[in-house]
Amino acid sequence: MADNGHIKVCIGLSGGVDSSVAALLLKQQGYDVFALFMQNWHDASATLHGDCEWEEDRFVAELVARKIGIPFYFVDLSAEYRQRVVDYMFDEYEKGRTPNPDVLCNREIKFDAFLKCAKKLGADYVATGHYCRKETIEGPDGPVFRILAGTDPNKDQSYFLCQLTQEQLSQAMFPIGDIVKPEVRRLAHEADLPSADKKDSQGICFVGKVDLPTFLQQKLKPCEGDVVEVYDAYYSDNEQYAFVKSTLESLLKDEVTEVQMITSYVSEDKASTQQVTGCPFDPARIAALSDEAFLRLSKPVKYEIKFETETYRSGRKHIKKTRYKENPYGKIVGRHDGAQFYTIGQRKGLNIGGHKDSIFVIDTDISQNIIYVGEGHTHKGLSRSCLRIDPSEIHWIRPDLRMNEGDIRRYRVRIRYRQPLQDVTLVMRSNGLYILFDVPQRGITPGQFAAWYDGDEMIGSGVI
Image 1: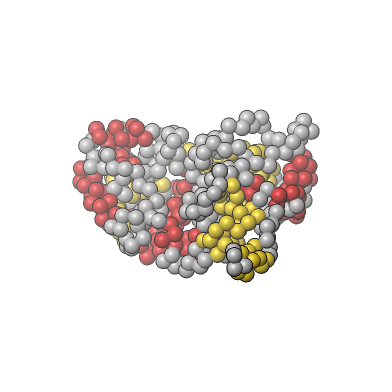
Image 2: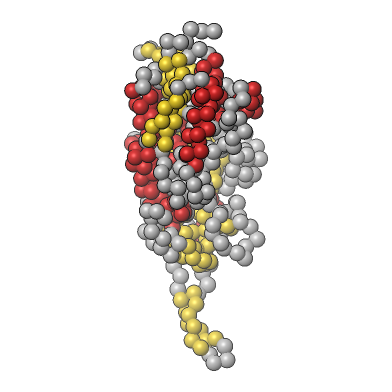
């Protein structure tokens, strides 16, 4: 065994099986390990169970530390968590964007506030139970740290670390990144750890399983508005949709005859059944496209459907009533309690009947408080081929691989956790980084993080 006894490692012990086994492995590898449990949430009123789940988690974490034989400490970071994660979430939802609290928690709390606390207790490194791997290579100016996908393809959690810096990575350890979940459970049973059969946590990082609208209503006021269904005819006469289609057609390789505007669908966490045979776009044509054209290409279709009313007489007594005139582009099909509570691609909680296929949110207009919906997985409003990362939001995990203006690279991207990696062309321009997908993507939502990979390695990320 390597002599690791002089290296002090703080394991973020959550009470779950993953961090428990991470602690066990570090102890077995001879490190000087101590556990630190962080409380990030006080308010149980928004959780579905209505109890303080963190108290039970702390109890289990303490039992695990005792079983392994490592010191156990507790820190309350709820003030930092509220300010740097929860307030940001409220702010983003209020603007009609969909943030990822788990990515923020890792950037702002685990590898910042928590890391500082661990260092005060003498830690050289902070370890977590993430399913991802870290490698160190020698660069021209010293060591360079790489984040690689976890060995277990079903549990790879590298996406959640997409905003970490080289400085944060230099002090991070991921002990279970190269083993698979069943093996983690087996090791926990073998060591008789109290967390061996504990279910994986769900919901918002450290808050617990919450009903998101209830959670958001703590700060965001409900406000009734219309739900508008958009018909296919809208796209035939929409300038933006026509521009996107013609621009994508202009970028196609000569041998590709048709541009794909809609993605086929299997499920959120399974790859599409489409057979993708390499990039359909010509790199020279991509390079020739102007910054302004790229900016417009990355913009979603916006919906403006005006509904006029008419009066009519109803029943025997010919009572005067008002109704909306039929509109070829769409129809008001329901009411909602606040556009900020909904996100693109959502289908639960809409309560709209009378349709053969599922209804999905395709856009939210916060200023007008309108939700636009479409019927079916292949509705034109669900798919987009290009998105933009603002220059201020581009983050390079590997600054040595930063793209310069005019650079074009082939990478693979995911825009949400558990999404299979998608083949893309990344194009760096003066007004942003553009991600051009080989195949259109469903439910691209502002506020989400896009993370790009080269093989197994995550290279960078940015807010859509």
